[in-house]
Length: 637
Image (cartoon, rainbow, N blue to C red; front, side):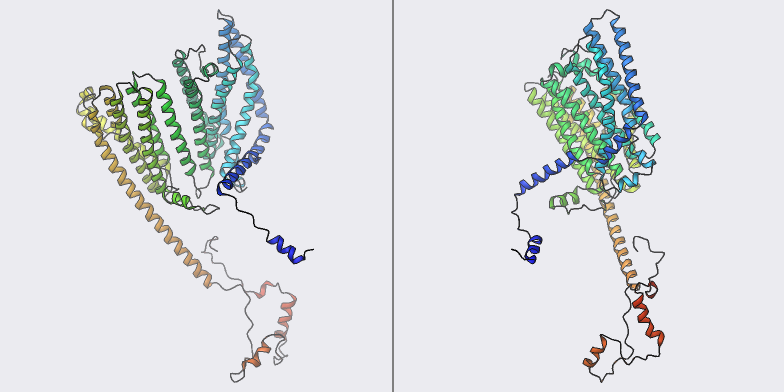
């Protein structure tokens, strides 16, 4: 039988548990967090789905769009069947009509529908309550995205029976239909994420819907045209029978396990979709988070994923081309991939001078502290991260293109000039991108406006491209006729000089022309170094001023606290103090206990004060409250 004290001690001090190995505990924590995320009932998702399913407008759109689509497919199938086409060809045409119309509906409706999810919270005065609910930005954005995606997925489910008309004619299989709907999902996810990103950035629902439609219509036209063009290019090599934007359904259904089809028709679109959704949702998170929080870290993680996927796409694309056009194709791939570092330079030129003021809930470890101090949030660390990323991107592009060429075409006779051409482009373009990055980041710190900084940075880049071109045309218009042998001198300071040198080397040889990129490398390299030094100094001066202001504010607060009267009641003063000749021991018993007997009883008001204070101890009139200084802000008081 245990005593009560022993049971209390046992409850407060349980037996110590044996520490588990670090790897096992970290793995268990990761699995636990993954299970929590998978089983988490997102309240935003539940609320939005209930609201959508109770809306009459959504129900009407559901059955009206399905009816219009069914009538259009029936009309198209009837018109095709009335001709002399074989039934299998008619079935393939009906298949293309159905999925093309469904694609148009998604391109038009999905961004506009998702663009209302966060702006409606702002207009309904519930956005602040949503932020104060305790949910982080990622959980809010994820709930909004899943709600919009799920509601439009119901529309596709309602559309699904209509495709059965194509089976009446033949020429298709259920596998073709499955890959067709997979293609629709690949388009639906980025469209919804784009609408969520617009909704997080804008304040008005009408403006968000209008901007979503203005951007989605030309994007949809370009996307459908690109699909048709790619289908015509793949029609011969892959022996396809279908014509139209959904040719990949037949390619995946018939050649799914062929490495070129699997890589170019499945993995490459999957990478593009995931990278687009990730980028748009990161932008939505940056729009939801306040300015005092970290907004750049999601984009930094995304940039690493985009870099890895781009390099893998280059490898897959080089593997399917022929050895005859290897030199020119390597330069084309390098130039197209070189757009990614330019995008990185523009993306990371929008950081405030100082890192966020909100500290993480848990203290960071040594590696994270090293990352935050050198490559973390803030203008200077983010510029260092972006510069390192740009250098790694160009180095990866050069290595992947050269290694892929030697791997797939070991006996080609164009390796020398192709390798020198891609090296010339990557080295020169690195200097140009670093100059754009440092100049844009400096403008962001000076102007305190990210949009203005980006516009001015790209305006300066465009001016550096246009001015030498116009001056060359004015001075000697015939100089470009001999550009394959020598580039005009004024064009040496143009940002497109590395691309011109690379094209010239890949077409005509002469690897010694790689020395012509020294001029743009030196000019843009020195400019980027100058802008970076000025940026570091300006950020350091801003940080010093902010620290001095904080120290001065703390000193003012301490001085004001010292001048304010205390809220504690004053100590009673003894009226009859003992004489100096009296011993101290004789006065100590009288200081504690009953009141002194020598106190006169005639002073009735004074004798009644202790009784009144005992009867009403909570009387606020007996305590002198400090006066509030109107010049002191509320957060400092």
